[in-house]
Length: 364
Image (tube, rainbow, N blue to C red):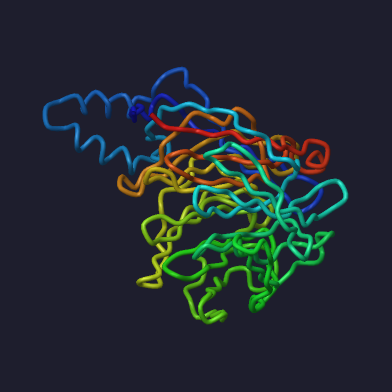
């Protein structure tokens, strides 16, 4: 059930936290106002008149505080079987109601761990490790196989360009054609028979690369990402690729964009309500759920669960995750949004707050 909120019921305050390095944090905190401004009060008073409701709703979307004109989505969270290995900066791919989680960051660095979650049985299984240990990697499921690209090796100074594919039928990995360059803290999404690598740190981060699994060949001849970003999130829905949030140049981002492979064009969407990087996204019930994230220059993590509805071209606020985390991964299966792993503290606190939690949200 979706319930619409009066945009005057909240205001946004921007706060910037700077560190000694290049990182900054642009947080959007929502606080209750003491009273409405006179223009906004008149706006809602006039909207009550006959025939003015549609006009009021339309104008609301373009008001200076339009990002706050959101709906709420009802639902509940449930805790599932914990992941065997607690880890952060992980990636996941979904195949046949199963989630495959690869790599990750632990106190000793990157790991090669590969584990599968069976949602129907609520059970985990350890599988053959990926041949190269890595963290901040990306994964996608396509045609019954799991593809894993890039990431960092043990340190943060060694981004990878390798692409590996896992076959569940043989429990074995095969190396495929390398990416055109190195990437880490990026995303990879399967859309319209291709795998698209978007954002990240490494070579030419604004360029998007497309991989054809049938030909084992990469192309760089696709439209560039309009807003360069890393530690971002992405998901596919109805043949399009959605990219939400992330960070760049020491600040968290709210930018949301969608790519249509049929036209090779990007379109700007309404901004993500909460600026954040280190987040995750998955498509569920016709919406893109975006959850988690971290502040920059501190150790706070986000529990926000915000969903974009393409049909309405608007964001919906859903019940927050029970456990705030960053560096997590997610999956959407059978109407349920699963969030997996990560760390409950940001920055240097990541290593001492690794999570193996699996929490699942179902809208109602």
